[in-house]
Structure formats: structure tokens, C-alpha cells
Image 1 (cartoon, rainbow over the protein chains, first blue to last red):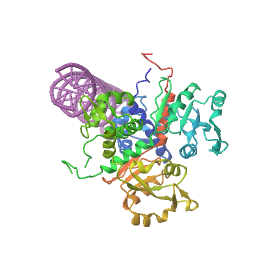
Image 2 (cartoon, chains in turn blue, cyan, brown, orange):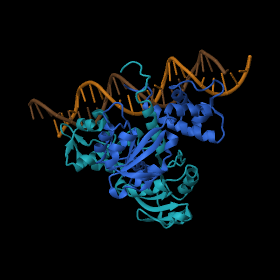
Image 3 (cartoon, rainbow over the protein chains, first blue to last red):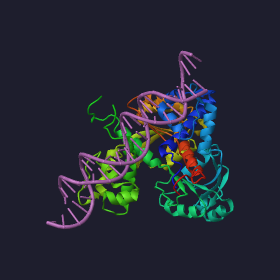
Image 4 (cartoon, helix red, strand yellow):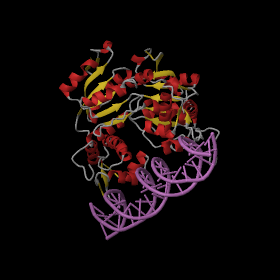
Length: 218
Length: 218
DNA sequence: TAGATTGTTAATCGATTAACAATC
DNA sequence: TAGATTGTTAATCGATTAACAATC
């Protein structure tokens, strides 16, 4: 039931590798060693080699890694080349911004529908798509079979909407509501974002930045 | 130089405790044991007790934890009761949404200025504040001494703007640009968000959800 | 007092780092 | 060939879990 044994720590680093390699590629760099890359990314060369070797040997002894090839391979591993039809639930401030701001197609997602419970919003055009009423959700899903839902709704709505969406065929959630979404279907995946928690983490770090209570080393 | 020895893993869980305890408090629950809380939060009771004991003994044997008190204590540890004056750099889709959507004051931040390099945006009102031109940034900072900056700017702009902001007294960054911000001043903290990486993580998980390659257990 | 549950130490587990033989 | 750098195994480190004595 568990994935192919690759730990979540490694998985969460893949997008970062992909991003750095993409940047290098754009800058016209052709090859790189794990050592050089480790310096750029602020981690160890060992870790890079370990991480990559979860998926296969992409390098060459004495040479390093071909950036174009490695970038392509990691993209394939992540799955960016297969498009997933995606709906957005909640077209408020944040939902609209996400719809307009994210480069979905470059990341394996195609936004195909936007829904909001506020009738005032219905018909508004966001990111080239008309906002539909929540009432249309069922029909729309039966006709268009989206598989991914982005939730930009209040936290109270999330636990109500999510199971309904699972029944309509959604198998992946990108959840921005301040609610820890957990779905018990083993074939549904959830990525919680929690901007509020991120901001509080910053708050903690600012608060404890260099306070009086320093014991030991300077 | 390092903080008071509390690991980042623990720190990142604090906001989540704070959120769950806040919800319980709102629902009128008065006390809870680490066991009950662990079930709600989907982690172990051991971990909760370990985490909390990094900061002190807030519970009582045979009883559990007083929710109101624990919530208050964690808030104090995070530092939500001290306000940090904050500026937003970049008033595009995402920046505007963040400004309007986040409940800053509940999280220890007070938004005091919004800046954008696009002259067209100047004067526009977002979250009750006028958008200012980037040219005003220096004067504004010297007069108002904000300490936190939220970056909602393109990735190419981030490495240019950040050092300038540090010089102007910024000691904390909430960074939404697709760029790994790293500041070498030991007294400046950075919280990178990376929505793109989050979306790619979802992509990976959807891709590897239940593919052919299942070896061993079902 | 008896029951429950903490705070804390010890054991386990997993993730990161180091080392090095294989090889380009 | 000699030099460089990988892939991979072994060692270390840190984080999570288990256990239990302390105590409300």
C-alpha cells in the first residue's frame, strides 16, 4: 500500500532539485558535480547522491551529472509531463490569486473549473475560466472528470466538501484551508499548505532570534 | 549563535498545536490528555509530551493539560502577543491576496506598508493601505522602522531586494518568490514558502499513488 | 487510596553524513 | 594512465517511540 519505499523527506526535496537544475539549464550550464550542486543548494554532496540513487544512477563517475538529462529525469519522476485536470473550490482573494499566479501547466496540472458558493461571484472570469456555482459541481465533475481539487475555502467548509469531492472522483487535494485535511481513502493524496502555520513559525523565529537567554556559545 | 536548542522539527509543530488547542478552546473543551490530543492530531502521545517539555511542564499528572492555559502558553512561546511591523513587497495577485487574506494581527504581525515597482499600482488601496512606489521604500523604512518583509515578487527580484531590505532594518522575511532566499546575517530569519514545490510534491504523490510497481504487500 | 497521566529516561528507528571501492 | 566523481555501504547523528517511576 505504501509507495515504492521513497521517504517523504526525499520526495519533498525533488521539486527543489528540479527547480535548481532548471535554473542552471536556463543559464546554459551543461554539467555539474554533486559537490558543486551541494554548495549551491546548501546541503551535502552525499545527500544529493543518496537522494538521486533512490531512483537510479543518473551520473557518471569522474564527470558528474548532465544537467539537461537529470532535469528531464527528475521531471519524469515527479510526473510533470502528465496533465491532471484540476478544479478550484473557492474563488476568494486567495483562490483567485492561486488560479492566476501558479503556472499549473508547467507542473502537471490543468485548471478546468472554478467554483464558489457566493452567487455574486458566478460568471466572473478568473484565469480565463468562468466562476461556477457550487450547485454545478456534481454535474461538472460527472461530465469532465477532474481528478485534483484545490481548496481555498474556510476551514469549516473543508471537512464537508472534501468527502463529497472524493465521491465525485477527486484523488488529490491541494488544501489551503486552515484545516488539517485527512482523507481515509488510501488512494487519495493530500498536500496541506497552512500559510498560517508558516507565518507563526516565522513569528517564533523572530521572537527567539537572539534574546537574552543565550547559554554557552556565542 | 544557535537558538535555545529547540529543534526546527519541534518549532514547526508548535503552530499546529496552537491551532488545534485554539479550536478545542472555541468548542468549549476545558482539558485534554496527551493521548486524546494525539488521536485528534494524528501523532503519538509521547511526541506531544516530549515537544511540550522542551518549554516546560504544562500538564498535571493524572489530569492532563488545561487547554486554555496551554494555548496561552504556546502563544506566548511563539510570540503572537508581540506585534512586528511588516511591509509587503509586491502587490500582484498573490501579494494582494496575502495582504487581504491573512489574519496578521492574530499572528503577531501588523501590516504597515505595501510597495510595488509598477507605477500603475501606486495609490491603489489593498487591505486598507495605499500601494506605494518602490522609490518610497527607503524613506518609509527610515521613518517607520518595519522589521518584517513579505516578498511576493518575481524570483529574479528577490536576491536584489533582500539585502537592501536588510540594510533598512528588516530582520525577518516571509518569502513567496520562487527563489531560495538565504541571508547570511545571523540575526535575520527567513521563512520560505515555495508554493511551486508544494504543488510538485502533490504531483509526485498523485503520479505514484498506486501505480503498477507494487512489490510485496498489498 | 486507586486510577490516570504526566515528565523524563532509555530504546528504537530513520535520516544524514562519511568513507571508499568502482569506474568513467 | 591519473584524476575526478560517482554509487553504495557503513557510521553517525537526531528524532521518534516506548517504558516507567513520579505524582496529582
